[in-house]
Image (tube, rainbow, N blue to C red; front, side):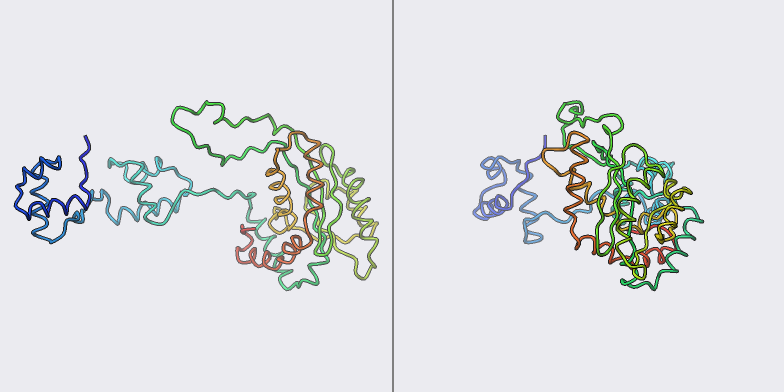
Length: 341
């Protein structure tokens, strides 16, 4: 049975009762404590003049500072290791708990946090990204605003977030309210194509099925891009950006763009962080996921995407396209590697 803890008020009451001549046993019977508790408190008051508990050393550490540094070296080599794996690799001949491992990492300022996922970059990808950014490091806003950024994105009807957690009691994992229901392949998806620049936002286009070079020309380039570019004089004609997806680089698409005097921006592979339109897709997805009631059909998703696309303001787009120099500088600092964008 847990011991009752003496409050500070009770402690001073005991000291006062003892000062009036009451014995330890008398005080204990009146307050409901053993007389040894009373005697220890009075003795402490005589020695220190206080009634609060003295500082305690606590449980002694089972690892040394040198051993703690060894754990940090392991975590630097294997940052994705679990506490169980770290315990075995750290001091295999010692009886330690995973709690000890977590406490040592926490004391060093480390914590298990969400993993950032990025496309795999080879050395060749990094070299090409770095070279692309170095060639455009001196570009100013006047140059960047000519670029028309395009991209496609596929939105799932039912998004399953792997980081989702639920607050529940033990042994209630299969209670219906604690279960997140899923459907195969996200219940279907909607693919859209979009294009933005510092000064404009073109119409959003729904792509039916998988994107092909022929679809790309018929639904995006011909009715939207070429029509928009033809409204500009040749001297101030924009520059069109698309990534290196196969439909974009088919011979028919390349010839079509050349025949219509559409200048394209060379693009380094695996570089979504350099395309500001990627952030617009994120804005659309978050807005639709936050809708109440939730969108339940693909037609509703498509309509919501077109509606939210119209709600994206010029100021939001300009904050993204106006930051291209910062994106380029970030890639250069990373020597072509990953950035926060």
